[in-house]
Image 1 (cartoon, rainbow, N blue to C red):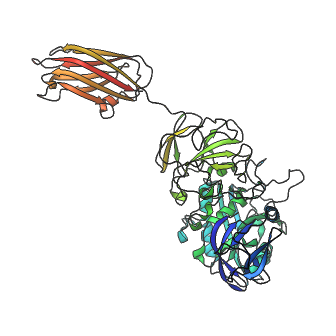
Image 2 (image 1 turned 90 degrees about the vertical axis):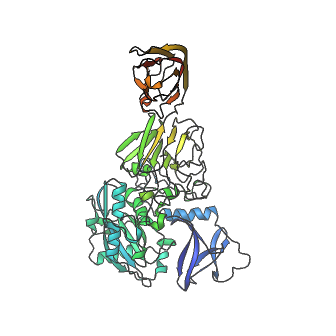
Image 3 (image 1 turned 180 degrees about the horizontal axis):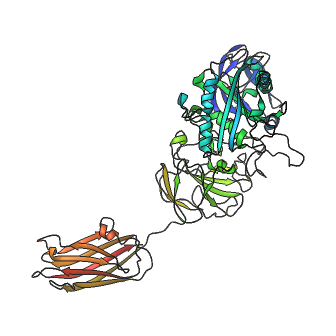
Length: 617
């Protein structure tokens, strides 16, 4: 399905000029307004868009076209009643799925059950799949797009025409890590018998396929499984996309038989007026339904009791609104939740063990999952830095998804029993996607964070849908980029322990034994930072060598006969700047720390007044 959330689009009229309208909806149910906010409907008798009247909760045409002043008393932003909207939605949604068989439970609008989050119906998401794409022209609307143009967009290697990121084939090979090789044979163009407007109310698929088969097309070659059923059919019609009726881009089921071969799912969209209009986004989105049975990850605004839409994953997933990114030229990737449902993620990284992890951008075969102990509920983590297919998403950084295969993206309420199937935990703590205030913004992903970014009492939080603590803690997230680091588990708090010695002891002159002074630290832990301060009186510090020895015997040279002619060694040594002292990092903290001083020349003598040790662990 291809949803539109308040965009201005251009529509043709049978008996008038083109008109710009604001569109809300999808192929199941939509509403149109003119530039001034008045709701309009297409009047078949007049061949024009006319102002809508609301009669018994349903739109009817006023007969007054949109280029005239609105009828007296008509208000802006009219909406049909919930009952009317739902009945129209139901009528069109019924076309999407194959009929339920007697031995199966009836099809459910939401995507839980034996399909584990996918839509029901035949799935062909692996192997070499050869689809059929039919180019269609109308009696009154043609296109200069050729079969060669479409073939390049669907099957090309290193395809970048019109600024497209890649071809459709390359997109699915990338998303599936080579598990799905989806190619298409392009036929046509076939000219239909009627004007374009007729097909907004009458599905063109059967007429177009009849003409293709009559012209010699053999459907059995599109049956990769050898079961007498076409794997995938696509129909691209001439002209701009018509977000209206049966010409709204969609994926539905149709049962037709030609000789011994039956049809199953098909998708329909436009090919534009010329090859400059060709973009891969919508084709990939509808093919995602057709091949993989992925659901839409947004709220249609029906059946959940509130009749209000929500954005779901917005621009962050192909199967939400991400097919529109960059004008359809750089569609968003398929989120890891959906890739995993079809078996494309064959490498699993479990995040239940504390430690630092790396998420690699573009590693589409890997799923990084936090197991909550519930078979249906889990968290997924993914690198969505703004590169590659993510160059046009609104934010850049680490994405964290709260997933429940028993949920539905029709349920935007976020309650224990009615919540998303896959929801993005928006880093700014907003619910803009759920409340449809945006399709995503720059604060929705986790950029660089020092300290805790997500846990049971942050906003957003990592609590389960029943309100209990999942145990997931994410902290110290690195800069977005090809490799993004983050830490899982309770944050380790730094502690500091200090010890000192007031010695006032003379350093033996010109002696290989030297002077030894010790400090005992009675605390377990690992050294993270060491700071040593010395207070040594001596007339010529170039005679001195000073070492620190850890409880485990590790030695660090602090001073080694430098400073000719200088007196007194009053100095602070820090492992952050002293390479020798940095070698102490990771050493065991507990035990005797020893400072050893040698005076390796005669005549000048000195004294150790005091020294101190500060260890961060």
